[in-house]
Image 1 (cartoon, rainbow, N blue to C red):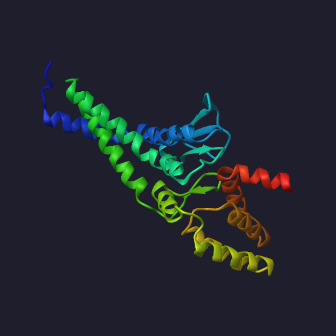
Image 2: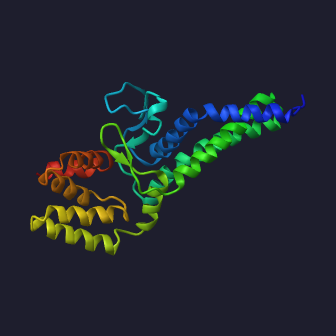
Image 3: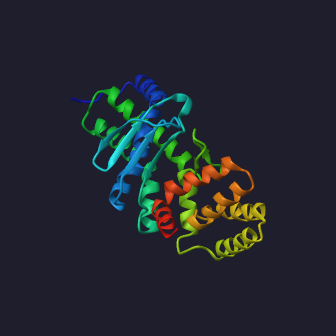
Length: 253
């Protein structure tokens, strides 16, 4: 059976599918993070789809748990978390990059199958629409943005492009600039200049990958200056990104 192209009908299907494709592309984006996370980490992995800032019921499949509550008003509140950190920065980069790669790969594969196997024109149009939306999503997610995405519970995260940029900058180790800034922040903290310590660390957080010892100082400094919302926000980042470090500190104390 030959695929007979009606270009006008095809374009209508492409644009229609683009309008409704975003929830599906978003789900595949988070699964793109989750699959390499399952490969490179040993603990539980969670995909949160439509976070509402409260307890959500999840569907558990082995080590993977899916929490879902979609709302167009909360379209940015989706993320993937994992309890243990990957052992190398390249593994972390693969987890971060997977969010853009999986939906693009899945959508273009579907479109190519529709073309080569002569499926109905509607299947080809949907495949092309999904591919266009996946490409747009990949561009927006991989363009580094230093402005964090604020979650309903006050925690925040950066987009994938920004995370990859920080991994590249910190591909060898903590930078000399970061170490110097951290030492200065510790000195200011010990002198009880908590606001000065916050200013130094916030400046370096925009340039380097977050490190647990810096976040730990920020949590305490914000708390001691009465900025409890910021203290709580960084405490949640600490527990989410560095659970092993937090456990070790709690056991040591």
